[in-house]
Length: 261
Image 1 (cartoon, one colour):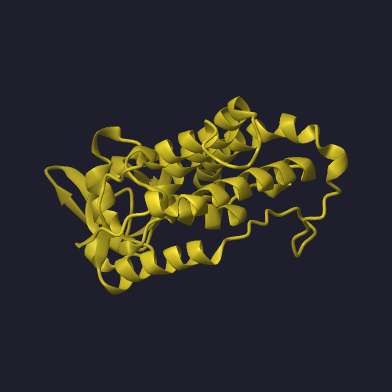
Image 2 (cartoon, one colour):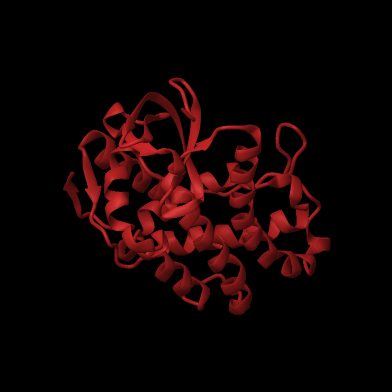
């Protein structure tokens, strides 16, 4: 038997194979000459426990976890590189004032109170009222980012091609990879599995509600040890502009259509 009760494993997300769910084997059974394992997902209700074959599991080791981290870093790198060249032009304007508790450079993004209220209302709909936002959303995350990058904003920055290659591609890629693992409430997982069948991209199904969740979590996800102060400053400015755009257009971007699970 490859796995035993109590073994910790990683389960690849079928719709974003570069991300994984943490799980624990709670039972093993041989059927038709092949082993299958009952796994419990860490942090999820036991109703999501499921039987999986060995080829759908990866033993949870330091090496496998590092591989997972590398995949997620690759997404953030694509976003980070889009800002590095443009940020160098403003190098003299930034003195690296952004310091975390351990002396690391960190990203600071101010969230308007109206968007904070959106986050709270979304949380209450899903976790308290057991409702889910209707999918697919219109506009989708991809459409929101493209409209912003194509100049539908008031930042006054005309360097749209740079935004398209950096901000849009980076955040869209990061969103696609991060949503199954870190942007969903427990109640939303079943819906996610249904709507992302046939390798659909999350950014082409989900909308502003989940994009806002990524924006507020982004500062704790970025690999600061591989980013210089100027790059962080440039990324901070672009993210602030994006948040402003979302706020200015919130009546058109967010949905009030939630339905019972």
